Image (cartoon, rainbow, N blue to C red; front, side, top):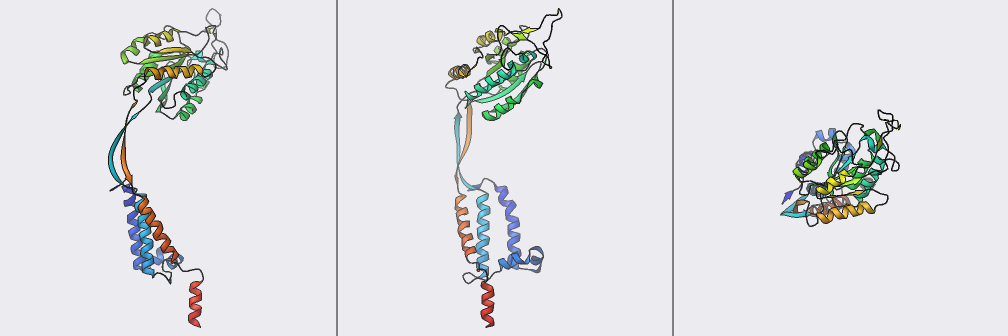
Length: 332
């Protein structure tokens, strides 16, 4: 037998022994430490149990409670459980073009909605979420807690948007580091595609790191003006409006890596289909193994004993007014 929380046992047993010693010896110091009412209860007379025996019963009950809280168990070895599902990194584009309004209310908010739908379609999978523009950073480490992930993603607003150029290589490099120890190396990118120059070197990096890319393209081929922080359209040097259009080049790179792409639309069916495709490709592969210690819990036995002894001790306490009636009978 062993304790799951042995430190709790040793922390509690020392003051318990001191308390028992002080009560049993009943020295003058006790009256200075404890109130007279407390000592009176400990010394209360009883017609059923002597003081010393009742105290012993109550002390034994407290001791058994300490043992139960320390959680005694009988170890039975380890059990290995293979965890189903995949590990994937989701990257959210927060570059300046994601402020464009060719999708309601804008590309960023629309992408967040689609990301949330994808999380709903991957309930048992382990997901990490990153954001990227000129730099890439982690929004949430790997977790299966989809409610927390959606809350974190929902907190990404337009204040995150960076008007600098989009660095897809930095995004993929961060994903590679996160996926370094994972069996499946899956990267899902929510983006409007970026410029061709932004995508330079991405395919080579994905191949080198063995990453399968899936792209969720957000935007329209017609495009929309690029907006600044005040929501005003930006203009080129020649005075024309800066228009950003959906670029499917990222989707081509995804297919070259062994993945696929989808142009995000209204409704959940596209994200459900993407989740099915990812699971189909990686079906039969476990996310990893979890070692669980098997043991027989014993805390219920000392806890039951403590309850029984506590009831015995408390039931032997004199009823209210009993001492007064005894003294009155003695006087008569």
